Every structure is written in C-alpha cells, then in structure tokens.
Image (tube, rainbow, N blue to C red; front, side, top):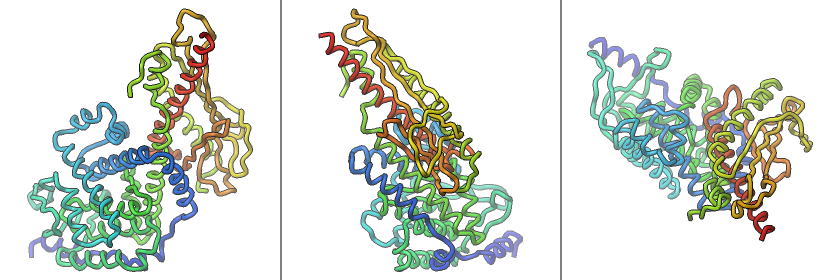
Amino acid sequence: MTDSEAKIHVLDAAYKPFPTFAEWMSRTSVDTVRWDRYNAALQDRQRVSGEALKRARETVKRAAALDTGAIEGLYEVDRGFTFSVAFETAAWEVELAKKGENVRPLFEAQLHAYDYVLDLATKAEPISEAAIRVLHEVVCKAQATYRVMTAVGPQEHELVKGRYKALPNHVRTRDGVDHSYAPVDVTPAEMQRLVEEMRSDGFLAVHPVLQAAYAHYGLVVIHPFADGNGRVARALASAFTYRAISMPIMILSEHKNAYLDSLEAADSGNFQDFANFMFRRSIDTMTLVGDSIRGALVPTAAESLAAINGIPARSGKHGEQQIDEGGTRLLSALTRAIEKELAAVRIGKVQGKSGVAPGGHRTYLPSHRPSQNIGQHLYIELLSVQPSRLPQVSLPPAVVKTEYDLFVPLEDKGGEEYLLKDRDGSDEILIPVEDAIPIISGTLQIRLELFAQRVVAELLANLGLEVDRANERLR
C-alpha cells in the first residue's frame, strides 16, 4: 500500500455519518413566533401585487444562483455586482461579461438548478436520489472539469455529472486539517439513508427551515459527487422553503465564513448553529422580497421626474450600547443610500436634501425606545423650484418632505428588531438588529437601497402632484 493509499484508508475510516433526523431534531429548534411574524408581513405584501411578487422572487433567485458559485470559488463577486445582476440593472450583462467568458454559463446553469428545484417543490413529491442526481447534472452543466490534488500536484479531471463519485474527495479545511467525507463504497447506501430520512413522517411534519438545514447538512456530510456538492446542497435546501414561502434560501458570498463556521459547529455536534444560520438566511429572503414588492408599487423616479419637468413619460443578544451603535450605523448607511438616490434626481427643477437629526419622537412604544435615548430621525425633502408648465410665472417652490423616527428595541422586552417609522404612521419597516451589528450586512444594504429608491420615488410622485396643483391654480 502506497503512502497515498494509506492516507485515503485513514480518512475513509474517519468518516462520521450524518445524524438520524430524530437525533437532529433532539438538538435543534426554530423561533416560530419570529418566522410567523415575518411570514405574515410577507403574505400581506403578496396580496397587493402579483406582478411585483413575481419580480421580487426572481431577484432573490438570481442573487442566490449567482452567489452559490462564488461561495465555491468559481468566480468572485461583491455586493454591487450581485445587486446589479440580481436586479438586472442597465449594465448587468456588461458587468457579468467582465468576469470572464465562463461565468455567464455557470450562472445560467445555477439559475436553471433553482428552477428545477422550484418544479420539484411545486409537484410536492418526496425528494428522491434520482432527483438529486438530476439536480447535480443541471447545476454543473457548464462545468467540464474539477481540480484534484494528486501526488504530482493539482490536476484537472473530467467532471462526470449526475453520478456519485468514483474517487475519494476528502478535503483539507481552512485550518489545514484533513476532513473526511463518505468513502466511495459507502456513498450509495448513505444517500439512500438520507433520502429515507427525508421521506419519513417525522421529517415531513417539521418546520421547513429544519427540513432545509437537515437536507443540506446530510448531503454535504456525504459529499456524494466529485464536485458541486455545495451548490447541490444549497439548491436542495431551497426545495423546502419554496414549498413553504415560494422562494429559495438566499445565501450570499459574504455569508461564507459564517456559513462554514456553522457547518463546522454541526460537525462537532452543535446542530443548532447551522439551523440558526439557515433561519436567518430565510428571514433575509422574506424581508428582501417584501421590501421589493413595496418599492414596485410606486411610480419610478424616472416617471415622476419626467412629469415634474414637463417631459412626456414613457410607458436579546446585544447590550444597549451595541444596540444604539447599530442604530446609528443603520441611519448612516440609509442616509448614504438616500443621498445616492437624490443625486440621481437632482435634475432640472428638482432639488433635494436629507440628513439625520436628534430628537423629535412623537410616538410611545412599549417594546422600543428612542435611539441614543434622545432619539434620532431621518428627514428627506424635495422641492421643485417653480411649476413646470408655466416657467414665466414666479411662485414659491412646491415642497414635499417626510421624516422617519428610529426606535431601538428595549433589551428587557426581548426585542430583536429596529423600527423605522414615519411620523404620519403610514409606513414602517422592521430591521433585525444583527443586520447592523457589528457591520451592515449585505442583505440589509440591499434593503436600504430598495427603501431609498421607494421613498424618493414616492416623494417625487407627491411632488408631481403638488406641481400639478400649482399649475391648476394658475389657469
């Protein structure tokens, strides 16, 4: 036996099988109250506009599909790039092309994988080994080879799609430690056992997040394919959230370290950490979709600008100081996002300003308090220098403004969300505190940009009405 064969024998022997679902359930739980709160808010949004919901789901799917490849190191992304591709902004295809000629085919294959999973979820059939093998074939369609470490160095091997591995695929972790996956000869039996667990009455009866986390973890423990196991696991997990909330779990590249940490914790028997991670990513998905729907229900900034300028329109865990610091960080990030939007609409007769000021809270909430104890509020103001249709007449400018008070959760009330509430009581958003502590998360950054787009667009629409009223008075 060669040294290499001996090493593989040792690693094969060190394989630790994934837990039974009964064992998994005995060590995990999910915050159903919080889940139901976010899900109820999402359901309210969904009843407003079916088309907006469809676009929002597509955005989340594109973000998940793009970043699943980045997590595996197939290419690199950043927040701006993910945002551009997910929302299909004007230059997204150009930006995607800059990443290399192989990136778009990989992205499209990953998109098709999420479509395949949605189809599985819609049919509501139990997951089968055949379905998982097809999923691997779909998600890896654009990948011809994979890298293998050999005695003479790294080599490229052909990636056989839709079949279980024929060679050991043990890996060296981030810490330089060898990690064992299922031996080749054990893999078919382990995959059969995983599918049987996912078809059990106990599994089918539990919360979708626990289903998603278990299915994902079981598959990555086995690592049944030569390559692409992470992408398959993330898509497979989304089958269960698709069934529950009609959308995938959005795991972004920036979550990679927390993602791997939670998987390593599960390897040590702490399954709850990974369940918590999957729960948070599910909440991310619901909040992003909800915010996208809200933003889609107002005229775009371009439409309102055209009207105003007389141009025909085209068809618990954190202390009070941490909580306050996170709130200040949240307002700063939101102000930057709003300033970015205002910079784009300060055109022609339109001017605008925004900022954060102390004090001013007018509402008492038993579960929240003013931030920094004195309160902080965000103000945004737009004005049109003069009515658009009669420039020869000098009138006071049309002005519209809005103000949002920031409330932070009271520690002794167990609150977990910041509350941003406008002063007339018509608009509010909840923001999980962990999205602003210790830094603004990528998901929150996207939410803030969506919020800024919506609020500025709403103000522009209202400003257009004010301009119309002024013009009417002159007739």
